[in-house]
Image 1 (spheres, rainbow, N blue to C red):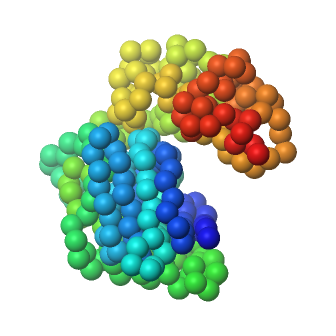
Image 2: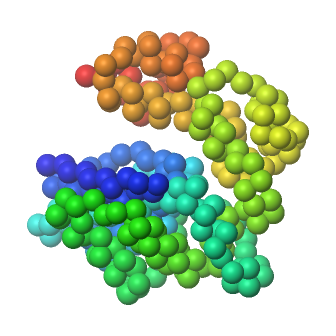
Length: 273
């Protein structure tokens, strides 16, 4: 049995419920907090394995690919709640911070996953306060969502001062959002020089700034984003694989199929079944 519920506003709360074991490749489009209610979650990231048990929480940086193995345990299903932080929310939150609160030293972490210390009462209270909404299938209003997102953001920042640098760019804070531009234009045939120009940068500055927001090269980021978009369209149904291939920005069907199978372990035509 599988159950997935999403409260999506300017940000999203997601609850997943599985009665059997599930494994999947996963990439966060947004910075994410995940909290385990029951069962356990094994996360493989760059050769490192982290296991989350009930009551435990972890922060996952955006634009990192991981393998998630969700397990039912002790006769209880796997049940988790996820909180995602959109770029718009982060921009708004950044401008509410008292500049005196900013750490004098904050270094962007290379790790993509940070497990929170155990027995964090603030984290437990935050996530368990969301459960009644899912159980009652009741969409909270935007004001409540915003308050919960602020609680989540405070929980992250109170965990490690270096997470300030992971969440916010203090060198040129929100000058021109490269990822926002690419999200809107990933399907278009643009050269790196054109992308740099449209985001107000020289090519060298664009490449340097891109390293601040992703561990991938711009080319690999675009390929992965196109594959993710293609998979969503395939699973949604209603379009031929060949149509999807060209709609998301690929120019060659066989090349698209090869890349898709490398990423998802199955041919796109089989995903559509």
